[in-house]
Image (cartoon, rainbow, N blue to C red; front, side):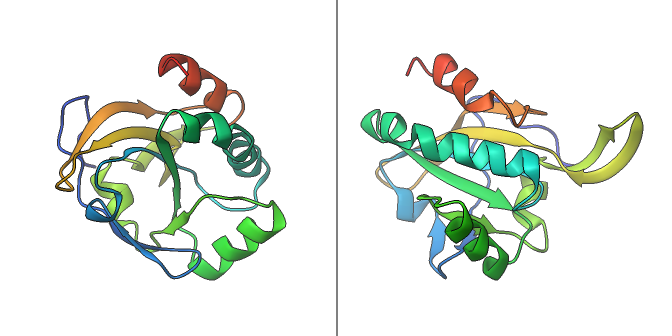
Length: 159
């Protein structure tokens, strides 16, 4: 597993398609402050709660100049269904081969119900993307909780 990212680290490359077929790279988000949140699987109870929390906080995040991107190993078709079902209003990125998830140390060994398993590690990254598309990790949160995480993130960011 890749070492966990720390504030000040260069953000690993991003080149993924979202639920609507749009490709997202850091250059596409030049000049933005991006929250890239990682969740294990679309349409599961915890992931739905977290996605809806981001949806419900989007106005405040937008007002603070923050762009939200969700990231999971689900295929774009499933993500499109998730977006439609829960009226999600931000892009959901697809990483079915888990390449990007792995470079962010958001895929690997984790504890689940007392057992060590390999899977997606629920994580959130705040990424500062400058005008040239160079991206730097501002915050890296690993093993976050699905419920209450967005409120905590907003407090941590002073929003």
